[in-house]
Every structure is written in C-alpha cells, then in structure tokens.
Amino acid sequence: MGAVVTYVILFGIDLVLKGGNFSAFDLRTLCMNALPLACVGLGQYFVLLTNGIDLSLGPVMSVAGSIAALCFSWSWFAALAIAAGTGLLAGMANALLVVRLRLPSILATLATMSIFQGIALVLLPSPGGTVPAALTAFLSGGPALLPIPLLLVLAVTWMTSWIMSTPFGLDLRAIGGDEPAARSSGVRIQLAIFGAYMIAGVLAAFGGLYLAIATAIGSPTIGNDFILLSVAAAILGGVSIGGGKGAPLGVLMGALTLTIIGQLLYFAELSSYYQSLINGLILIGVVAIGTGRRVVSGLLRERA
Amino acid sequence: MSGATLSGVLHRISRPTVLAPLTILCCLVVLVVVGGILAAGFAAPTNLLTLLSLSAFLGIAAIGETIVMLTGGIDLSIAWTITGASIVFTGVTQGDERRLWLGLAAALGMALAAGLVNGIGVAKLRISPIIMTLGMNNVMEGLTMIYSQGTPSGTATESIRTLATGRVGPLPIIVLVWIGLAVLVSLGLHGTRGGRYLYSVGENPTVSHLSGVDNDFVLIIAYAFCGLGAGITGILFTGFSTMSFLGMGDQFVLPAIAAVVLGGTSIFGGSGSYAGTFVGAAFLTVLTAVLAIVNIAVGYRSIIYGFVIIAAMLLYGLYSRTPE
Image (cartoon, rainbow over the protein chains, first blue to last red):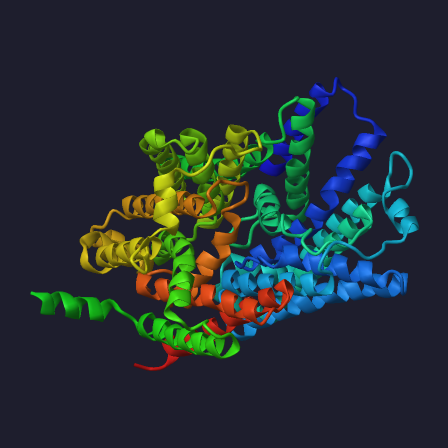
C-alpha cells in the first residue's frame, strides 16, 4: 500500500509543522477539502479499472452542481435527485460512445467533456443559483470528532469498496486485468463497462453537488480542475492506467495526499506556487517508484 | 528513384489518413461558404488569410502532438510548456531586442528539456504517457509560477511581434512560417528514416524493436520535438498577444488533440499525417469564427465542438472498417 505510506509520511510532516496539533477543526477541514476529490477520484477509479479513462468527470461535476443550485429554490429533494440523475445520464452517454460505438475512451470523453462543459455554461453562464444555508451548515457540521464530511468520506469509500466486492466488481477487475480472458470466462463485458461509466458519472455528480453546497453557489466551471486531478488521485492511490489494479481505500489516500499538500505548503510557509510542482513530482515519482520496484523484483526472480 | 519512394509512401498510408483530411477539407469549404452567406466579406481573401494566421498558432502547437500521437502516445503537458516558454521569453528579454537570442535560448531550451524528460519518463521509466505528461504539466506550472512569482513581466520583442502579426505584401508572415514548418515536418515524417521509425514504433513496437529500431530513442526524440514545438508556439503566441500571461497555453491542448484526430491520425499510433492536422487546425479555427458570427453563446459553441469530434470519429471509424 504505497498510497497509505505516502499519505502517512505527508501527514506526519504536516503534524510536525503544526507543532503536533491536530484539532477537530483540522479534521473537518481536511475532509471537507478532500471529499469532492475523493468522490470524483473514486469515479475515475471505476473507469480506469476497465482500461479506460474519463476526461468528462470534471464538467459532470459542474453540470450537477449548477443544476442543483438552480433547482434548490424549487425543492431540496428534487435538486439532489436531479443532480444525481444528471450524473447517471452523463455516464450513460459516455458508456454509449465507448461500449456501443466503440470509440476510444480518451477521445469519446474528450468530446463529451466539451459537451458537458457547454451544458453547464448554457444552464448557468456565470456563478449563481441558490443553496439553502441550512444544508451548507449541516453538511459541514456534525459532532467535533465525527463531522459530517468525515462520515461522507467514509460512506463513499465503504460503498465503493462494497461494490468492488460484488460479482460486478470482480467482473470489472477481470476486464482490466485481461479482457480476452474475462470474455472467454463468461464475463458480460459490455454490461460491466456500462456500469463503470454510470457509477463514475454518479460519483462525479456527488462531488459536484458537495462542492456547490459547500461553497453555497453553483459554478459552471468549478469542475475543470478535477478533470486531471481525478486521474492523479486514482493513480496516486495505486490504480494502474492499464486497468485491473487498485482499491477504493487507495484512491481515498490519493485524494487525501493531494489535499494535504496544500496545507503542508501553508504551514511550511512556502508559497502556494510550489503546489503544482510538488503534485507533479509526487505523481511521477509514485508511478516511477512502482515501475522501479517491478523491475527490481523481476531481476530478483530471474536470479532465484 | 522517386517512384520507389512514392510507392513506399503510398503503401504506408492507410485509408483514413487520406479520406479524413479530404472530408475535413470539404467541411472547411462548406463552412467558409456558410460564413460567406451569413456575413458579407467572411469569404473574402483578406479575411481568410486572417483566419489562416489565427489557425497557425494552433497548427504549430499541434505539430508535436501529431508526432507524439503517431507513436501511440499523447502529450498533455503542452499547456504549461507553452505558457512557461512565453513567460520565460518575456521575462528574459523584457522586450529588449538585444536579448532576443538569450530569450529564445532560455525559452526553447526549457521547452526542449520538458519534452526530453517526458520522453525519458515514457520510454525508459515506462510511465504511461497520460500520467507522465500530466505530471509534467504540473511540474511546468509550478516552475513557471515560481519563476514569475505569479506575475509575468516583460513584453515580446519587436522582431517576434513582426513574426507573429506582420505581413509580406498581403501574406501574413505567420502563415508562411506555418506552411514552411508543415512542409518540413511532412518531409521529415514521410521522406526520412526517422519518420519511418516513428510510424513503425506507433504501429507495432515489438515488430519495430525486432527489426532493429531503437524504440526508446525514437520515443524520446518524439516527445522532445513536441516540447520544442510547444516552446515555439509559446514564443510566437507571445508575439501575437504582445505579452505573456498565466494559463495562456491552456486553450491549445484540447484543440490541438482535436485537430490531430480530425486530421485522421489514429490515437493508437502508426497512421496519420501532418497534412491532416493542418486542415484540422484550420477547420477548428474557422468553425469557431463561424459560430462567433452567428453570435451563439459560448456554452453552445462548446457543445457543437464536442459533437463535431464525435461525428468525425464515427465517420473515420467507417473509413477504416470498409474492406479494401
């Protein structure tokens, strides 16, 4: 579990820099900041498992958040349901292009990324809409040691882990590992891939919904940063671009790692200009170390 | 002698490589006609030359992307390589013509280094191109932010401004530069051994390796070219906008990839051409211009963009499936 180690190290540095203090407030902030990334990273995880990639998840977050912000004044429940439904529909559209029309996932989702981005801008040309203050307060509140954001992070990780333990999850792992082998052993490949994109859409929508609620406003471009961050979180969490590998807990660690780097810089009194540099180096470093370890273990096996 | 080379070239060209650019060229002509109907003067030669000069920046940014995608890879790091090159260039020269060469060397050297590191990561460390160039994009962003402390300074030198916006008679210089680069790149891709190796690595790395091609070296050179191309784009675009600003490269990444794909280069590598990308870049620029005439909201423009890419890919899928 390289992801856990990376996170624990960074967390340790963070603690030292803060002089050993980790208050309930810090816990709450960390979870609030990490939750959207954890959601969309977990969504990306499902698509990466099938040997694909989904570049449209960021704009899906924007669409879901914008729609919810527009609908909240009408009905809370409808707003939440419509936002989740949007994610589901977006995932279906991607799955249709990839599974039915056999387009390469990176290009299909590049195109839908543009489309979803456009939809978000048509719905909400500039940040706006309303979010009930009570909902914002509730989702960032809760008991000191068990704040709602922490519960949500745990819930979404537990849910995705549970999905991975079902036959559907095993199918997904089999497809990414070796698609022809999975096919010949009776895995319903198209169905499984369809499911993966739909789950990804819904998880991204949750992330976008939470962002809108936490920032108390709908923004049509808020998801843009997450297009590539979601891939980074999953990769840091030990998921392989080649499919088949990784676990939801790792992705959560990846999201926490990317989130804590920002705090670290703050407490290390380094300018935030270093954030992307460090993000990039950690991303390349983690993957390169993974490769290096494979090479070394390969050599050792040859000797033996 | 030319017969043998020509048949060799034709043999390597797959159907989508020929049909895709022709399709896009037809769509381009239709777009220009539609534009001409919608707005008087749109199809006038002067306006078309202006549009072509706007396409040039995208077209030059897409040179490297074509080369990398021919190997079956992708480069997402051109965004901040373009921005970085531009900011380093204006920062070093401060608009002073005497420091032109120093500025060019610093900006292009940095862009080339970024490309080389990408290539080494992909070829030697076997990091997936998406992750490697994604990480590199972050690294370049960080380095650029640290270098500029968040506020880019300086302006483009007069000579670069002339290169990007000047004219020789009626012809924009940037268009001539673009055409010159396009001819060079096409000759390199289709007429040299290096070009042949590039296609063979993209088509089948194993076969390529077994037939004696140093795959790793070819990949490293391909990414280095892409970095260099991004650097050149950054400097030229600085001349166009007279100064550098944060995030100026972001607008190039996805259109560059789209231009390559619309031009018929396969995302899996091994087939395609820069001629296709050239037409693809012109098409995307004219499409944006036509949508701007209709005064359609940005959101709808983005939606139309997406559907155009999907339509093109579905069409090209048919081309390659048709039995020969």
